[in-house]
Length: 138
Image 1 (cartoon, helix red, strand yellow):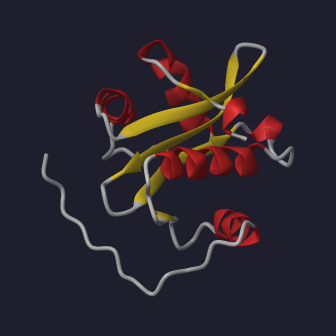
Image 2 (cartoon, one colour):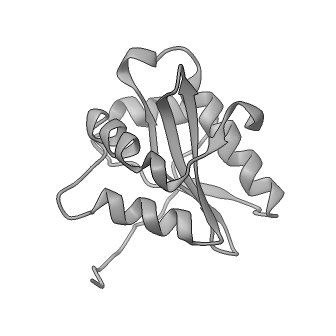
Image 3 (cartoon, helix red, strand yellow):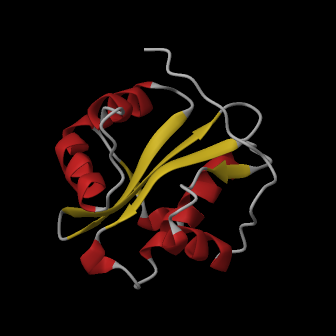
């Protein structure tokens, strides 16, 4: 499955931001361009994408912190949903993480996003009994 996805480059930034906006993934307090730059510049992360006729129609940011793998910004263009691209992106992320020796994959989903929760549960992911805490450092 990984062969279908390719790694994004900095020239893909505006197309990624447009896809993430279209999919409702951006938030005012997170600069998606900074997130993209950081993911592309960091040795322990990548942005995987799928193109259809040169257009980016799916993406995921994947990273390995040395203990577990993380996925962010999983997006599939609305016009391309229900065609298996989300499943393909998650398989590509799992492959990327396996190549780096990650024993576990996890990600955060907003608790009111029933569609995303149902999608991940259909792939065999289970809700974890954890609470996420955070604080901005910028």
